[in-house]
Image (tube, rainbow, N blue to C red; front, side, top):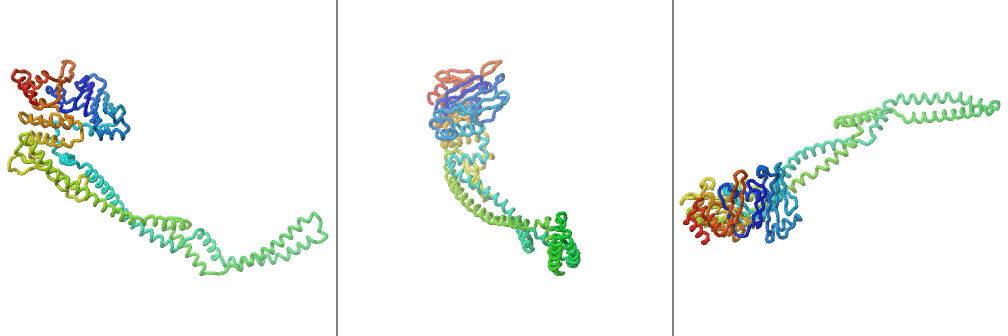
Length: 549
């Protein structure tokens, strides 16, 4: 629960510190005195957005700290422990805001984010503002109230998470289905291209070999004639070269000066013989083959044509075939993945329907109980002729929805015999305020926050109804710590603790907070009953109200 609130230089507050007790604490004061400032300041500690205009004029910054006792708040202790923050005893949420607009938040002295402050704040305090009935008109708020009262948090998590998984799978399926159509077209093209390449079967280095072969076959006649002429020339030249070798080997020529000459002539004769033999062999290997020439030209033309078709060089065709075969192999898993996703979608949808059905049953059971409790409370709030119902409206779309299988709508009939209709169309402002209060009071039975704050939720209510409101809030104070900002003396008289907010000063206005007891409290309740001028009867009435409470 909230045990201390410290405010410095916020709005019209220069310095304010208050210790709070269990039970019901009433906060009263004249209009504009700053009663709601305490709650606005507390809201900053639990993650509300900051406005530098709220800083007290002339101050450099505002500093607000709220101290909570979490010794009996297991959920808050777990939250703190998970973030390595001190989870024993007290928990201090602090917020500072500078005139330049810079904001800092701290939990137990450690810097933190507003998101974390808000998450922790939900475990510590629940604020019901005077405008809460406006949000009550929204179906989402009505659904959350019903689900909270039903204690269906675990089911809601299951339904929401399963629906989210289904949506992710659905997106993957749609994306892959579109890709599969593209894959099928690509796979068909690849299959055709690979078959065409495999039919031609290009080989590495083949074109170079074909070009050599083509050159030989195309010039076969010339090659044969030329080779024969070379062989004949070598033969005719051999006799003359042999005579030259004979002359060089004559004894009369045999000197050291002619030794190199003899070797050169002998080597030339040997090479001439080898040239003649090699030319004869080459000439014998070459044949006139028109059919072979035609086949070579057709093969070369096929390679060039297919290379132009794929916009590559003929030499790159073998590598192209390998890459297309690898791409085709990578596309074979698309259909299997699509089938697996389809199966996963069905399984997830089935799981969602199971969880959603359980949630629907819980909602139907709780709707009857909650409506009955609200009717009982409305009866005490002088709306005994009202009929309050909770309708569950199935969603038209059967696809898994994070909200479950149906939406919630609160219906009310304020006149006997009338058909219940939506709150927004039937209830007046005053009626809606009382309905909202009844719902808040009833739902408070299942509240998970140890501190509940009601900011002028009794606006538009007076007389005996206001006394009933005070009794209801006092009863809540036995379950949770309750802070009530009120203008109703009947409500203020029910508090276990009474705080008075006053505004003083002319040039420099500031608010002060005073703990009331004894005569001072009687006078404040009297002021709320009869205005600024207190009479004996007013004070007697105030004293009687306090004593009876």
